[in-house]
Image (tube, rainbow, N blue to C red; front, side, top):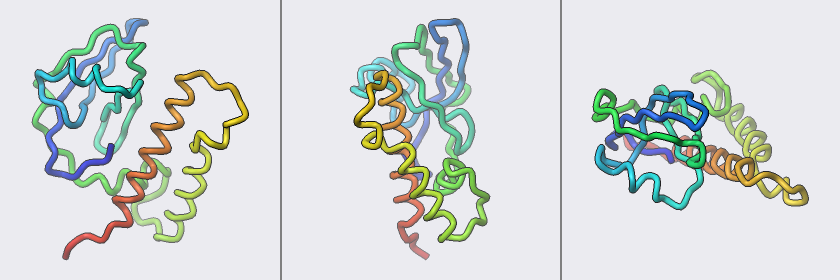
Length: 147
């Protein structure tokens, strides 16, 4: 989910089933809305681990999810640059280079291309999440900004 700079984020601390710990932030949920976050129909939670860097965490792997007031209330700068990060491109890449890289990466993560294969549900969910994130980031990138 690509959001604009005015959206508030909530810091979270996640302990996975295997004991690994993740810290980051989620968009669109207040500090007391962790149950609502888990009740969403998606199988993955999009976790902001650094500015413009995301991780997708399977809800099935979460043992403990806590809000973390230490990170809550922070605002990240504009995330239009996140497309460059998703595509592994420098921020000064030309629009033509960005477009070609986007088309290549979007095709690679498009779940439809694997339609003939039996994929684990988690893999299919990951492909759908990445394809959606790329699509949303590209929309932000190509949307003209008011001057």
